[in-house]
Amino acid sequence: MRRIAREEIVSKVAQAAVEACRGLPQEVVKALAQALEKEPSPLGRKTLSLLLENASLAHKLGLPLCQDTGIVVALVELGEEVVVEGLYEAINEGVAQGYEEGYLRKSVADPITRKNTGTNTPAVIHLEVVPGQRLRITLMPKGCGSENMSALRMLPPAAGLEGVKKFVLETVAKAGPNPCPPLIVGVGLGGTFEKAAYLAKKALLRPVGRSSSRPEVALLEKEWLSEINALGIGPLGFGGATTALAVHVETFPTHIASLPVAVNLQCHAARVKTVEF
Image (cartoon, rainbow, N blue to C red; front, side, top):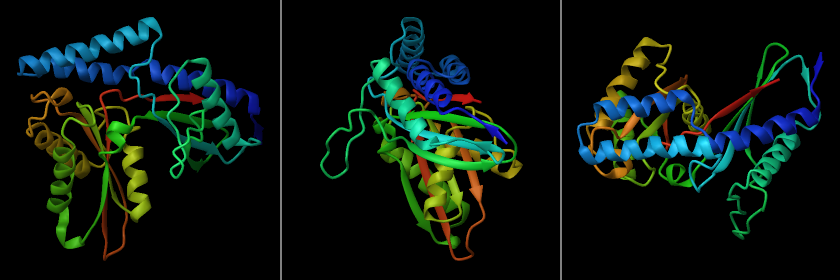
């Protein structure tokens, strides 16, 4: 068995929380640059240029990409041969430390009293047990503008893939400029009510533009991306052909009488940072 010190987790999570809020993954920067080359709308091109400039300045100056530094979603892959004492507590301590030392806005509040917790914790932690001796923690600071525009629907199986596509397009169209496009559209298809929502969230962690390993799902991603961009919402809602950078679909077997679909939207500031131990 491999033991990982709690202090090491706190330190690395704190650093990752700060870095996630200050820099875009390179594949997102690349996708924005490619969208700029193809965007036919003058205002759309101007907007994409400003988004790229913002990302560059945030990285260079050590400033947050966005004033909304989000609620932290953490996907934890814990090896079966790893022992960690107080894993959740260590992650939350790391997040709190990072947000304090990085001068990041603390946005987490009690849902009843609306009182701010003052630490941007607790994080929303999803744990998956995997083979081996590794611990991998992926942080995604999730902004409210995009999260609030996400949706879930329990479709009847008779709705089929056309019904799923209709719901995905309706969700993006209804969201309009609110989630700060260009978006990454995460779609969870199958499982149960809560599984579909988790799949949609997990889909956002896939590197931007990396197609599903299932050929039939990859075709759906390509088709739905084309139809979403045909909506004309454009960068930040100012019109154009770049409403989304990618559509990522994750699937799971479901009951014969059910067809759960969740759509989780991610804004252009698609912040993700992974640490491994």
